[in-house]
Image (cartoon, rainbow, N blue to C red; front, side):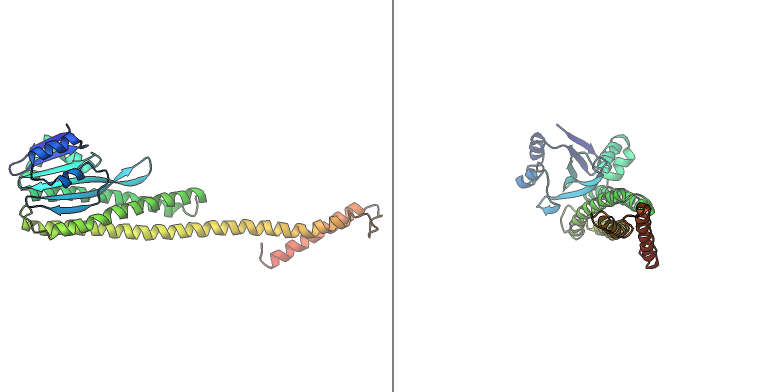
Length: 305
């Protein structure tokens, strides 16, 4: 079984890692009044964020971002929370570092345990959510640093690498926006929730969490606008470089047209001017060279080169 437990004066924290059917059954025995549908949600891989209330407890499902260094993508980590009179239950897969770190600290530091669990279950819930919300901002700083790196190299680095970096950043920002946006309504509902297990004096504290996540959402919206602008800039630079190459190739093709015409005419088996001249080859090559130079001078005067 993967059920961990630590107790304080007013609250007991039960932490369940990688929940199995045995863990859910044990939770059912300990708290028989928990609704079967809520217990069923614990084994579901991808539950949407939500807040459900019952007579004796509150059930939350929330998502927070974790960084996947292999995919270079922020992925959502799910945590389910039961809060009732004198207890707090968290169920997760161990991906959220603040949650794992907090439990380890409670095992080794009595001061941390008292700060977390001696103020009541709803106070413990706020303390836990505050840690998880604060964990979002280092991820946002990493996104901001990556954007600055792209801004500094967009005019000097090769186009494929810049475009790839912008695409990876854009995908990450979209994933973060989707995660953060879905949590704000949950915390807003929790802020105004009237329930016996939620202390009324914590309304302002939950409101502060809403403000933090709203600020995170605004930062992500701004980052998205910046990355869209950088993407358009990169596309413009690539188009400009392609146009420059096409302009050179077009000039070369246009210059070759009259030269091909001259060589084709003098390749015909008919009498032509200078065809019998001893220096006919030199004259024809000189004529072709002169045409090419005159055309280059013309293109230069028209600022096509």
